[in-house]
Length: 308
Image (cartoon, rainbow, N blue to C red; front, top):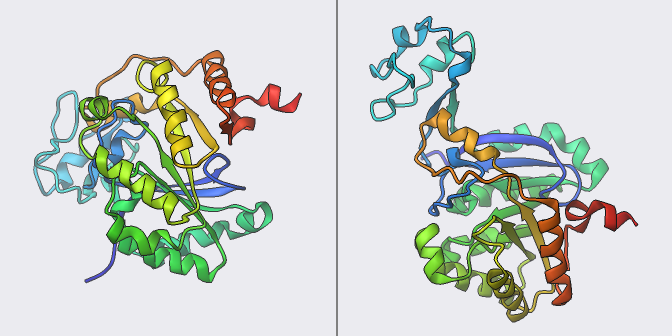
């Protein structure tokens, strides 16, 4: 059986997901249901056809080629419950109103595509970062990808929410050069209410990664009213101290993910929040610094003060 995983985007020239210039590989599928998810199209592991209504000229060439009878003439073009995501409608649409999100990649195909950016990795000290979704859902696939990256001396990083089987992933995780672990909600009841299950495993995985000497760094997404309350900031401070860590990356919420809900007919709620204010970001950074926790991405969080 061919080893594959669902990739929904390979993004190039990233500067904020590890050292240097990086390529980001987004894998599809996640067990959490964060209401602030920046990539709602990543939550389901299955491929999906997205519909951009503003590009549609209603030629209905898509309808003529669809083998599933899944094209509709209403507000949304695709009946996902009947769609096999074969991509025939995407190929037939001359105006890119339809787009396939999620494609099966083999490790070899993925690394061959990434190798096009190797000169940028070498000149900047960059590499490849695996994100999602939850990339740790595909340990066998990533294990092979990491072997191929190692053969080419490509630096690797993985971004995780921590909900994975440590036993299945340990060997793969050992091959990483860096690991970003998101601390989302540290109150078990709030975690269950807003994100779903899995909190005990997430907490245990954080302990095991630190205790096992993995190259893990922790991040906090700052979402107004959810993760940036004084109580939660203090919980994160105490958790980092308990883990023996003195640094954190701060991720400011932006609402660009909400624009993606409509194109996939997603069920994610709309929070109606604005981009995270710079003054609140500065206040969160000051909170951690007062507690002896360094903001590891300070030049991104507070560029003016960092340069003064």
